[in-house]
Length: 328
Ligand SMILES: NC(=O)c1ccc[n+]([C@@H]2O[C@H](COP(=O)([O-])OP(=O)(O)OC[C@H]3O[C@@H](n4cnc5c(N)ncnc54)[C@H](OP(=O)(O)O)[C@@H]3O)[C@@H](O)[C@H]2O)c1
Image (cartoon, rainbow, N blue to C red):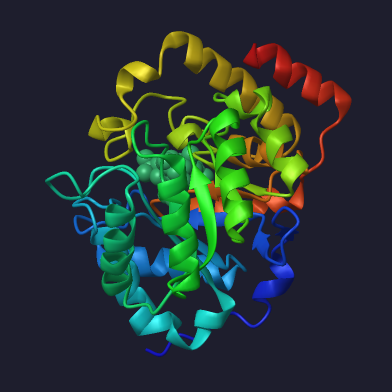
């Protein structure tokens, strides 16, 4: 059946300006790292993508290696594009990345010009797109000169294969250097994508200030700590959950100490008439330097839950103090 998106989709979402750029991103964006691979059920992936777009989520985030197997999330997204989203391409911000190991040999990893240009060409084919809106260098490369990596990003924009450039997992000093080189080249950095959640707060130690000073946006990945900051693990590890798959979230990461924190945070969330997932997302969005929270989901029910975050974004001083006392 032909996909007709919800007519009032743009009234349901909040759009935040990305740093000092011309682009606005939805307060909640959808990432396809997990649950959109070749091993997943295509119709569920498609349902989630449609539900997201219907709710005003205009931004979909990918990377060359998302799957499993690597590359298959981009293929899935390409199929969804073709079936449902082609008429809406101009309403969407689609990103991809390169920086982690993708193919064997010396040219399939890190940050050389050879790798980045080849990888984006492959990504565009998999997604059946002419260009992406944002292309990221996925992680800093300790060996390639930053000038080479940034020149490759600049070239990609000049070639029209990406409209904007981002960096991910760069620390504050690396970010400063990258932004300086990009500015000199004439392709300013649009956005940084760091890991940021109640449980992972390294960005507060300098990165967010650096980004604000330069007018660069910030999209926080794994804002639910891969599902730990939801009610999912309150009563053990459910079958099929990320922790049960023993990959990126391993059961031993959900220690008794972590579980005790999750339970206390859940109580505060209940007091706010919110789920823990909603409170965890609102807590990140309270910082005006954050453009968007980049969530993952394995079902449309999770998306529904997370989207309700926007109904209650405010915190009292008391709530913030109580949350802080749990997080320390
Ligand atoms: N730049 C980078 O290096 C990098 C690294 C990692 C991620 N990312 C990006 O960030 C995106 C999000 O990462 P993430 O998936 O780790 O984010 P996350 O939002 O912290 O975790 C998503 C997982 O949490 C669970 N979940 C979500 N909503 C829920 C709800 N309402 N109730 C119960 N459980 C819920 C689901 O787990 P189950 O699957 O167990 O149901 C879901 O797969 C990725 O897709 C990717 O685009 C970027």
